[in-house]
Amino acid sequence: MKKILFVTSEAHPLIKTGGLADVCGSLPKALADLSQDIKLIIPNYQALKTSENVRFLCSIRVDNRNINILETRMPDSHVIVWLVDYPAYYNYPGNPYVDEQGESWPNNAERFGLFCRIAVEAAMDRVHQDWKPDIVHCNDWQTGLVPALLSLEHGRPSTVFTIHNMAYQGLFPGSTAAVLNLPGKLWHPAGLEFHDMLSFIKGGLVYADYITTVSPTYALEIQTPELGYGLEGLLDHRKEFLGGIINGIDLDQWNPETDPYITQHFSAATLNKKQLNKYELQRRFSLPDNERIPLFGLIGRLVEQKGIDLILECLPEMITMDMQFVLLGSGDKDFEKQLQKLAHLYPDKISITIGYDESLAHLIEAGADIFLMPSRFEPCGLNQMYSQRYGTIPIVRKTGGLADTVVDTLPETLANHTASGIVFNEASSGSLLEAIKRAMILYSSPDTWKKMQSNAMKKDFSWQSSAEQYLALYENL
Ligand code: ADP
Image (cartoon, rainbow, N blue to C red; front, side, top):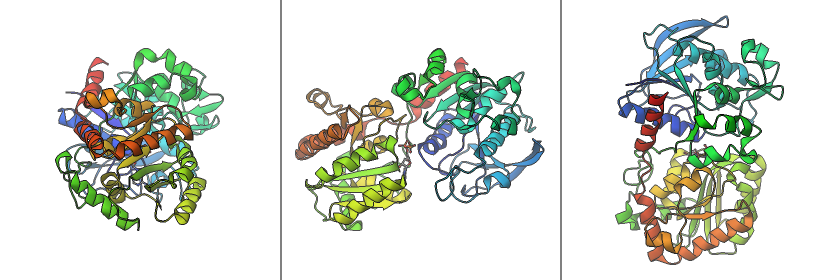
């Protein structure tokens, strides 16, 4: 049995802004199910919600500050959670990273720098809990200083750093290194320095004993200039200690047979009930409730990464077709405006909901026929897996985790019962439109469509095998 300290800036259902939270909410539970002794450490944000009791664990002094550590559990699990409680840094309204205007909190380097320092104290058991981990597993830039600082400790645990998205690196002016009082030994171009800036993510990439990303394809892609953001050389240098492990999904939360957010439960054997969710979605957004009109869904951050601009380019032609489109998301204000304008012009075809809505996300997965995910890059992606589980055929670009989890529909993949979506190659509106047309043709053949749905719904997206891969990695370290 390994003792694992899992360090993350978000974990569902405590606090979530995206896929990182889904993974950090479910992987620790899956590791606990494999009998591992795992604790999670996370900042105590104002918006953090837990249904479990919270108790005071201890108080420590770091950087001339008194910080409390509180203890709770992941809801409905035995996984212990340590909350780093320092109100001056974490008791802010809204999002862990940005304010209501979408601007990064100006003291993010200090906020996550302190969080990393506390995680190091916990990793070295200087919080005096008679619990010293064998492994410290860090996630994304917010935790990047942990492997760096631990590298200077004697008798330290092994470190794993998982990249959930290379596009976010935690870059700050070089002077921040002094503000954070970082040891001089870490401040050089082969350390935390990146073109005169302080790079949190480099702390993970340079100093972790092993680096993982959330899909095998993305692990290769980040070693190229296109997706390496100038760090491809470093990653290539460390490729012996870099691998991809695909994310699983939480099969209890995303289960069309029991989903508490939908009223009509269904399985591959009762796909006619899926139709009732489609009616509900159509009625909710005042779209004609016609079962034969293909309904496209999209849930996600409205940013260029997700190919929202490609969709905007396709929509003028899409609205000439017999189709409907329901979108839920928020992000780039310009994308939001353009989408809302189109919804206003074509209210019987397009519905746009700007915001974050867990319950509506489940209804869209349940009620849509086709899920759009034309990402420019996608480290793993979760919605394409949720979609397949709900018999909603995903249209994805062949990149990262999308390439690893969706099988294109071709004569041979239909014959061998693996076809589960539509995959296209080029990040262009022309290629996306072609994929959309291909989906419409397949949709018009109910027998073929049912086969695709059944293949998709049968796939195993559980955490079991991925958690076993992480465990094998921990054991090798
Ligand atoms: P990323 O982490 O890049 O945003 P992922 O596909 O890995 O993308 O995960 C996104 C997660 O966040 C999914 O669980 C998705 O359902 C959820 N999500 C994103 N936007 C919204 C929204 N507006 N409302 C509800 N859930 C959302």
